[in-house]
Image (cartoon, rainbow, N blue to C red; front, side, top):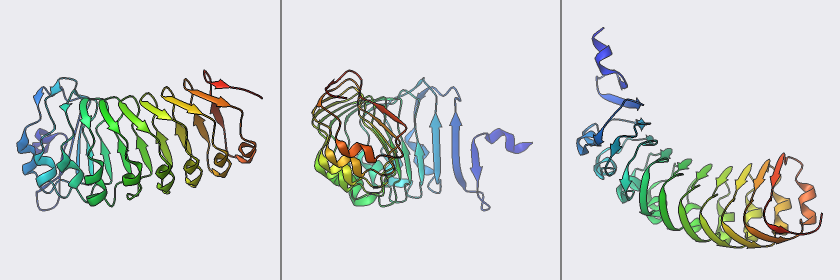
Length: 250
């Protein structure tokens, strides 16, 4: 079959490339900027190619304006995330996890352009700087995965303005300070993981407002005090892990 020469490529009725999916394709070298000439692509997934190195071409953000899903994960891509990526206004899903990305994330650019983003997955990189929750609150995120990076600073009160959020994973970073009362405003949240940071202070009494919370973990921090009485209201809670903190009481 002639079409078999184009494994991983899907075209629309006009013969234009609509989707590219290359999983464990043994790709080597760098991602060429010419990939951005595929201007009609809606889904670009290149994953699990450990010999794929170099930086993410900024041309992807400048030219591939139809992208809805961009997944470049499980590779060995380095450098910073091009700010142009955050100008892709149709993006619903962005996954750059399991690479060697460095530097700060251009949160501000995301809030200006990404009005549809629902899943942002950046775990297992070397990203740093503060997480600007007040900016992320302007997006319709359901899933935020920033685990195992070098993000620092505080989880500030504005995290509570991310009202669409269902899953929040911030474990294995360098976050400091206490868990803010604002977290109690996450009405749709189902899972929160804050393990292995530098968090201290007591658990906020507002946690009792998280009616949909099923999983909460903040092990290996320095959280102190007891459990807020309001936590008895968490009827959906299935797992709670606060091991290796400085908790007291029962």
